Image 1 (cartoon, rainbow over the protein chains, first blue to last red):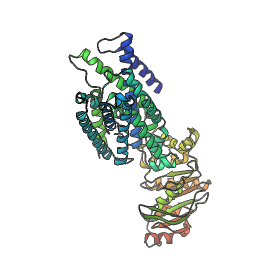
Image 2: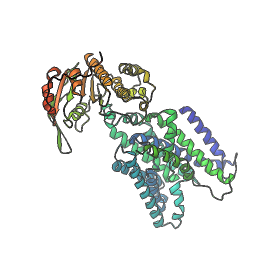
Image 3: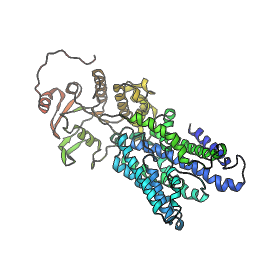
Image 4: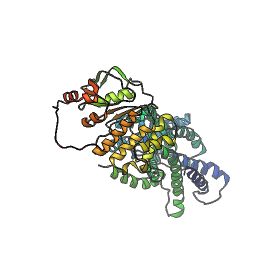
Amino acid sequence: MNRGLALVSVLLFALSLMVGDSVFGSAPLSIMVDIRLPRSALAWLVGAGLGLSGAVLQGALRNRLADPGLLGVSGMAGLGSVIVFYWGWSQAFAPALPIGGLVGAGLGVAFLLVFAGRAPSGSALILAGVAVSALSASAMALALTLAPNPFALAEITFWLLGGLEDRSLTHLALAAPPMLCGMAILLRLGTGLDALSLGEDAAASLGVRVDSVLRLAAIGTALTVGAGAAVAGGIGFVGLIVPHVLRPFVGERPGGLLVASLFVGGCLLTLADMLVRVVPLLLPVAQTPPLGVITALLGAPILILLARKAAP
Amino acid sequence: MIGLDRVTVTLGGRAVLHDVTFHPRVGEMIALCGPNGAGKTTLLRALAGLLPKTTPADPRRVAYLPQNAGSAWALTVGQIAALGRIPHGDTADAPVTLALRQCGIEALRAHRVDRISGGEARRAMLARAFATEPDVLLLDEPTADLDPAAAHAILALLKRTAEQGKTVVVVLHAIDLALRYADRIVVMRQGRVEADLPADRALPALAQAFGLPFGVDPSPRLLPPA
């Protein structure tokens, strides 16, 4: 299963290099390397990170509604990036951009763990998430309004809905290392998350250090989602959809979902980004839709479905 | 061997265990009985080393099954039992299969735990504890909300396990089951051990702890399976 998903990832990545703004098929090497390669690689990495951190958050919080976008973690990461970017800190020191993102994401996760508790009921978690989301969105609008850069507010769509337009190899080089570190941390949590299915006491009695699992889940999510949102904005719903779609096929064991969620998340966002790129070729529209619109169109119905199931 | 020596536990400013000394013996099935809030669960968690400032018990030797044990995810019975191998860090199949057979749910191995009966799900949790191949089993109300036949079956299984040289400590609300299956009954009230007696002599202490009269009741009742 995972091998097949890896193969599909490679094929989609190759296809993604072929799909361009104006032409299908071959393009000058410079376009392939400088424009499509970073964009495709970021699409796959950001999607994979969101899918994986969704699976880990759901396992750690024992709640199938957990998703970095829905819970405001992506929004907080975007807020951190906005502050660093428009106040010029990232021009002075380039890695400040992903660092701003992961500090924001870290604050978001920490707030959720403190405010909603460790095994929150569906409603407590969603309420906390809505609070974080709303707070981060309005703080972001405020930050963009106050920013010394006069064009900042015009880019609010990018930060709220995400996108991969004009991402360069520099963005890839900045975001990939923390994202890969975060993924490496998250992928090692399988056994701990499996044990946590039985509750914290039972997991502790199995020799699992529950505190350290939760802490690593928060750190890994902050690294992955934070660095991702710093370069791709707040793309929502991927972490919610991916584990949900996978469970009927790979079962509900949290540890068994991690690798599959990584690959399917990467494939999903690669596909969504290709769709974004071909829309202007197929439809008479002047602008490409933001990437987050595609994932929200897929994710919102699934969220409604899950919320109906979770309601008492 | 696990045990407690003069342990006092305070949770949220309230003493939930008061100067408790408790040592289970190998091959013994011990029932912890007492009114709600007597400290039975706390005693069990202290034995497992799950309370703050207690040393965690060796997870390969001591298996603990919490009250209302359930699974957040719809795992299969086999997956639940396999979680018992986590302390050993292996995926050995033989102990898992044996545990499922001992608990009488080998045939349900591939079934999802949310699609079987409450009694079967409880056995799946028990199989998880058995799969660890522990020397000590600490079980908090393993028969709560089970029908009488299922409750008798699980306690008979625990009794056999104790007789095979394991130590079984079980919190029980059903006094009749405790009297029938336990070797020793520890009666708790308000955080203290009020009595620690062989099961055949425990009834007066139990009656006192619960504030209930006791006597011979000739009314018809269900008997355990032969």
